[in-house]
Image (cartoon, rainbow, N blue to C red; front, side):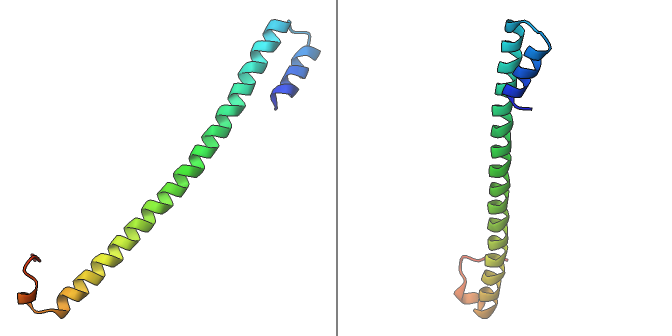
Length: 82
């Protein structure tokens, strides 16, 4: 329910104005926090996609380096350790 719907419902039930105001304010804050959490979850999903892509690229680069190392004689690779 939206905060205004809750406010109307509580007023129709005859609750005092102070109680209606407090519960409505809590409902509004809850709605904002829910939206923020959903936005953060979407960002986290995007970041995990980026990290996954980095891992895939790193793996492919490692394979390509090993292929290039296999093409060269040992003397041409002074900084490579096996």
